[in-house]
Length: 87
Image (tube, rainbow, N blue to C red; front, side, top):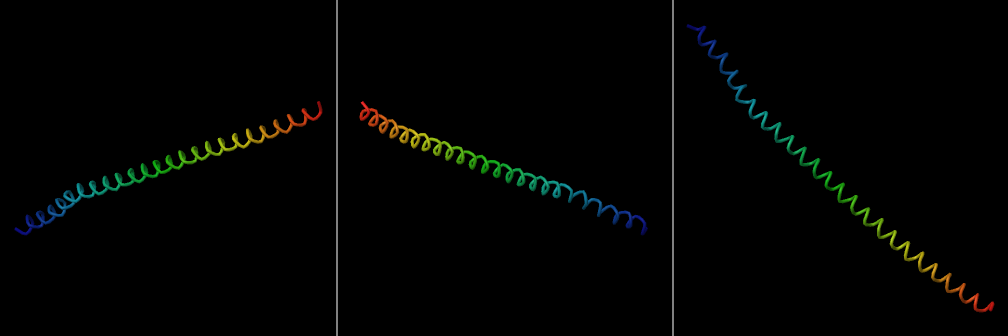
């Protein structure tokens, strides 16, 4: 009579373990989803940073061109004055 009770007792923990597995799997899936979200957010932030840097580079290049153009215009004006004096 005590043997069937022992068998039932052995069966119950296995049933509990089986019940825990879906919860563990759900927790694992949730952690993986959070990791994926974190990775996507990090990639997105990296992308935004790269775009900001490219825009800054473009602005710097534009300013350099404007400065160079201004400098060349000044040189051209000065050379024009020198040529006029030499005539």
